[in-house]
Length: 330
Image 1 (cartoon, rainbow, N blue to C red):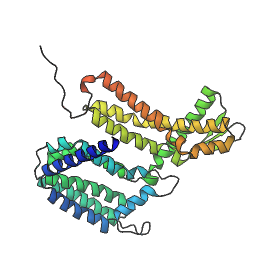
Image 2: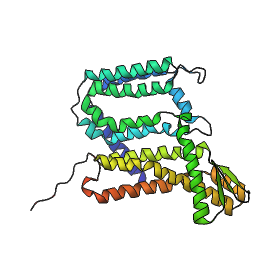
Image 3: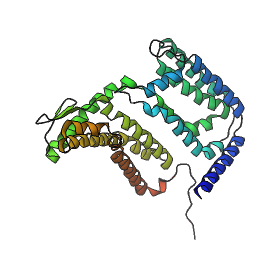
Image 4: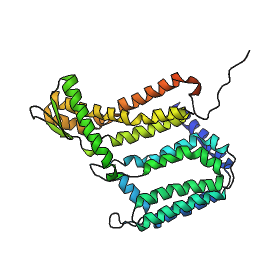
């Protein structure tokens, strides 16, 4: 039975994909231009050969997302293209309903993108080239399918911004976050739970000195903050058509991520305090299950805020862009 359902879903998807593909005009021209644009960044995309010995901007990005470093927090970049493609598929009917036409003015966007890449290449700043890469793709879509298509596809296309690897550039954000997390954990332990924990900068240790930990860069919460930010943006744009609902939901990502990361550090302290000292705390820190727990209060809080907004204004909630049912008059 499950096998039959799977085959039916695959057949339905294939049929829908073929239908959408046939409705899309000038796709040959777009994909030809896209291939040429992508080839530019493959063969002349990166000039920082002293760091990553490759001319490919894509390989430079892949290396940034997957490098083994304690402060590396850009792994979400591997998933963003799939998220964007999935959301484009979700919006396919709205996109195809736009008046699709060529729009030569979009060449301005392509020219700006090319200028960004040239500057990035010359001054060896691949991040500028990444901006140029995506601005250029956006411009090519406008060139072939017009301004209305660009407007309708701005979400989810701008989620590609989360593919920008920040690396050490996040230090001005992560260090204050580390200090804040350490202070929050010490406050909760001492003043709420009665557990003796001392915060010294980004370090946490108990009064007896039997365990001590540091809220390192990887524990600052920036990783969970990015993940929750992406989820909140998707939730906000999919469910709410009005601006202030979206702003409020997206703004909640930062405090929710902070709460989640504080929760994780508390678990580490509890493990060290009640389950075996330094080794137990280290085991809780390194175990995959405990590393996922910060997302539970963060995602739960996001859903609660979204549900509250829906109940507060039920007439504005629902799938954004979906047709609303009109009240029946009698």
